[in-house]
Amino acid sequence: MDDSIHIIPFSGKPLEYEFSGGVGGVAGSRNNGQAKSNLKRLPEQSLLSSNKPLAKLSGCGNFLLHVSDDGFLVGEENYAVERVVDMLLKGLLLRDRLPALFYGSSGTGKTHLLQGIFDERRKRAVKRQKDVLIKASDFARFFTEAIDLKATEDFRRRFRDVTMLLVDDIEQFEGKPVVLEEFQHTLDFLVACDVPVVLTSRVLPKFPQPLLERIISGTAVQVMLPGFVVRRHFIGMLLSAFRISVSESAALFAATELLLSLPAIYGVIAGMACKAMDDDVKIDSCYFKQYIKNRGAVMKPSIERVAKTVAAYFSFKIADLKGESRNKTVATARALAVYLARKETGLTLKQIAKFYGNRDPSTIRHLIEKIENTKKNDTTINLQIITLAEKIKNNLIK
Image 1 (spheres, rainbow, N blue to C red):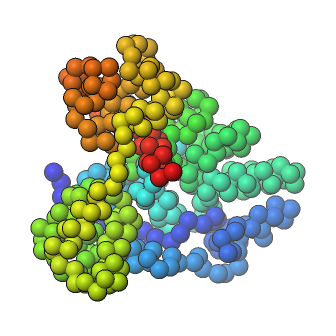
Image 2 (image 1 turned 60 degrees about the vertical axis):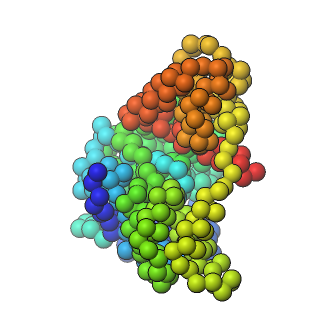
Image 3 (image 1 turned 180 degrees about the horizontal axis):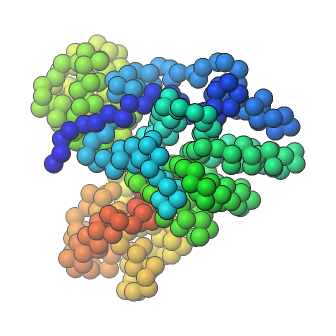
């Protein structure tokens, strides 16, 4: 295993709707969280601010960015992400490899990557550059306003006369067919001109199949949750920053148990520090381990909940997943349900086999291995797993 950690040196500023270049090279920012969008005026006046710098993250956010060296921590699990970022910054991703899609569950740093790519390109620019960074929800809102104001040509000039387009959370285009059509035309136009388009998605978007295939046929790379080495490194920085002294075995225990994103790990350690302060207790190795253990005793989903979520996603009944149908879609849904049951519930192969019609445990193992092998090279399966895991988690929270 490669235990080296790399840092993509990003600034860590919050995502804003920005133009780089433009009038005097000024970048746009939001005022009080609302982007200006009066499209009756020229975008240089309506979408660019004055000379105010972007607001920094406050509170815990600043600290989190500080302890991660204001960058994106990369372990072996995300070396592919690092390579794609490097290629984007060097202009090596051309038409047949566009768009670039970063996908993964919440908290893995996809938005941070977009902001970092935007900032790095702005710093490295040697000539006039017109990169645009925007959330999908803002792109949709601006286009809707442009239609109302009969200013669609102004909108298209602003989003097609660019040197790079970066769009965050494209799943927010779901259910907006007019916006999706405009986005597809914009994507096709830019890629045909070898202009890089960089996208992020938390889940598998419910787009028309041709558009979805177009997006994932470029360069799609999963942003993974941090691996053990990154978690151990990050926990060490947090312990140092909070001036918590525990044994190496306790720190290793935390890195093994906290299979979370870095912001979530930060939340656990910060929460422990606050609780210990409120209880007027000194944090030693014993307290530290017990806190992590107690935190880990979170309710897991039932196998029924997993099956119900998967069945609903594919518009099937649980009985279909338990049955013997060899229909390709049913078989895929069944394999995903079994895989997620093993991953999310912690049940044994025998227990899962009993739920799914008293199958042989070896059949369950085969289905799990099939998904494990398929997801290595299949972006759609990867996104389906992420989407279903999110839905299972959200059902638990409700």
